[in-house]
Image (tube, rainbow, N blue to C red; front, side, top):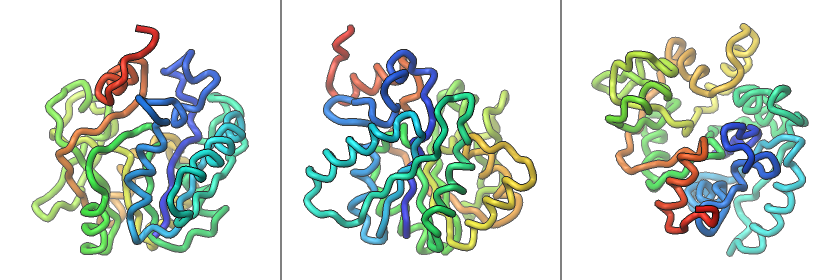
Length: 254
């Protein structure tokens, strides 16, 4: 299995902080956001390569970060490989789904693929998530229960059946039908990967991955893994400050 971290966005809601720093490289407490993500992925024995797709504006910063991070690693496997999507601004960004397709084509991925966002911090062990995927043998997405109506309205809202199959996802619904939100953390089966090109070739939204998932659940069986532990999306200054407090370091600007 391969892993792909999406880190090519421009984080405009975190300006001015992200005008000069890529959002996944923004520090939360003692380390960049992306390192919290890698701490969950690196211990998984099934992962044999990790890809990070970023943009042209911040690619050199990721190269510098990678050099430093590699020195801290106890072992060098699985390898971490960077990919530059060559965009230079938010206006010219490819969108997350096109970045996924770019990485699959660039690295000739012919394997199951874990995909996660570069701005989420998860507090649960990914081992059971992988085990769920291996058990069902089909694409699995994570879901998280929430009673926060504003969060439900600003996320992918999922419906599942008694077998945990995802039967519908609506992005940013005005009237959520369930309390299940869908973070950007998925494992696509190898057989699902060609569906990404099929989705893009029919002029669908290339941006938020949730739009692809909404489309996908109508085409094939997609199952869910529900986790109860908290997770933190660093999307704006409010969530950034909250994450800093949660992880034990008060902002210097406060």
